[in-house]
Amino acid sequence: MNIALSQGAFDSALQSDQENMSSMTSIKHLPRSRFTRRATAAEVTRGLDLSGKNVLITGCNSGLGFASMHVLASRGAHVIGTARSREKAQLASERAGAHISPVACELSELDSVVACSEEVRGLGCPIDVLICNAGVMGLPEPRQKHGVEMQFLTNHLAHFVLVNRLLDRVLQAPAGRIVMVSSLAHYFSVPGGINFNNLAGERHYDPWTFYGQSKLANLLMSNELAKRLAGSPATVNAIHPGIIQTPLMRNLSTTLFNLSSALSWPFARSAEQGAATQCYVATAPALEGVSGAYFVDCNPARTSIHARNPELAARLWAVSEELTADYL
Image (cartoon, rainbow, N blue to C red; front, top):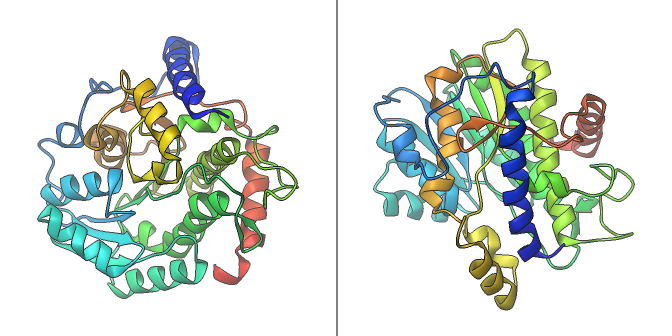
């Protein structure tokens, strides 16, 4: 999957979603906001007082995570920021001028995810918002760890472990919210959505369809968890942040990065704009009780047919439990 092609395809799919949204019975009843794709995280949270709220963000040291940390901390939230090392999280806090609780969490190492969850539990506080933000994209060569391909591990399984290990803390909050940072790339996953027979990528590997598979997994996890949280005050939703040139693109070759930058500039957005939707879904009073939805540009949007498959979501949850049994 060519990255230049994917940029245009993303924009086309998004336009199609918005055009068809009025006919989607599953989303037409959801609250809509006045914000557009150019809104920033600061704008969508303006006027909110998050004092007393505890917000956990993975990948707080750069990109969308850094922008989210900066804005939510400025609104009074106590941010628990994770990065690959405590030092990176602490440096990000100092760079943002925000006081956070820095925690190390290397998502490609499930032992590190477990250690992170234990440290967070040791803080003794409920979690009002858990934003599963960090990830990797477009690894050029297949890499395996824990028996699966690295994008699936880092983007999905690591957050699956983190969320499950901290779910009781989310439920302790008056109305805890979980935000899964997915992507419009979920439309461009492997055939069938999730290839359970090739999660290691050893039979066939394409960087972009495997990235799409991991982002579809984020969405399916959100949908299945929403069912499991039904009847509780906690909610979970997924979002697409838009096309942003952040350190997530660090695995692209120089040529490919420059090409994608040139072709995507008309609809690319800043990290502050990209963080708007996850900050909106994490904090907007209008979304109280909304769960199992997908948001683009701070508004509900249509997902792919695979993302709307409850059997696929249930199977992914079961397989994820099996793969991470030693870490849950």
